[in-house]
Length: 407
Ligand code: HAM
Image (cartoon, rainbow, N blue to C red; front, side):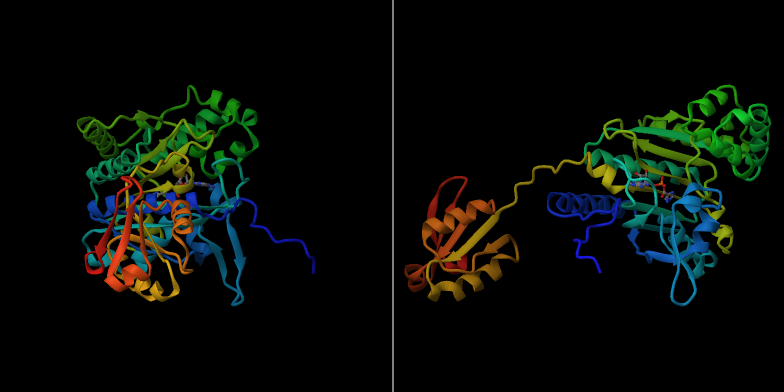
């Protein structure tokens, strides 16, 4: 066995120190917003049957085709690390027969996702998403609602964004649109990139978001999905735009926005930032009215989104919240127990850090500075005898003693 030090895997990283502080700051505040919108927290396993993602995200998608961490476990089951969160939540919904119960479900979740992509800035193999899924609301008002919720989250963290919007039609209008797109592309088939030559047969709309310049050039005169929507999709798309306009949410229509997952119908959207480089999508989502059915449930409307936490954290700055940090210490061995007891009760309301080794004044103040404490509270022989505690407020430089019970 080699003696080489073991390092974390490529595209995977530890989240620690300032980053973990930001991470929990983000999750806490995004969760609070989701709860205000009526979402409750749920978790699904990180490991699922591979078939779940084949049937939902789609066999023709890059995620399933090229990027899955799949393997056969000891019981000969084909399993994989989840590449995204929606499929697991839908699996739960169907497994628990909630499709038969009627009513509405609103869940939010956060956690690690895994995609075997080529790592680069903003693109990891293990990354984290914060997502929300809604079941049983067959109204475009819900689509607008979740878009506004993402906007609320981004506004809270003062993150600028562009919202790109499209409608992908449904089972009535999408097949016809695909046919007309294929007809248009067939004339140039051999000029398209290798991937797109395959996509024409497997899932032609994926040609629309190919990054290859030649493919993009061939799309300039291609038919647009938004010009080919059936009546119901067209009226939903108009209504969505009206609600967003009425609420002052700015957006751009991007008729080439198809998303990399095959389960979407009607609304599809992405939030992008121009401050984080090439991997600019900070959130994505849309409606998936047929997904419950694809996974064996009764037809149930669904809509949701996920935010890429690592990409977002590049843009999040902690808001200054001045929280008191109390540093406590003993000036001699005999006072230590009293310090520990007082610290335990102080902790019920205030962040309180205790130095376990008795020390002199000067050393305690140096240590307090290191942990950014703004209140230093010390007990020595004199205080112990009087039942008091010495306090110094570092900001105001005030020094005083308090009765222990007033501390
Ligand atoms: P997605 O667009 O594949 O959608 O991922 C959502 C977000 O996850 C992206 O916008 C991006 O910020 C982040 N992300 C994706 N891949 C990576 C990566 N390799 N490294 C870092 N961040 C990444 C979904 O996953 C859908 N499940 C969203 C959804 C929920 N749609 C409906 N409900």
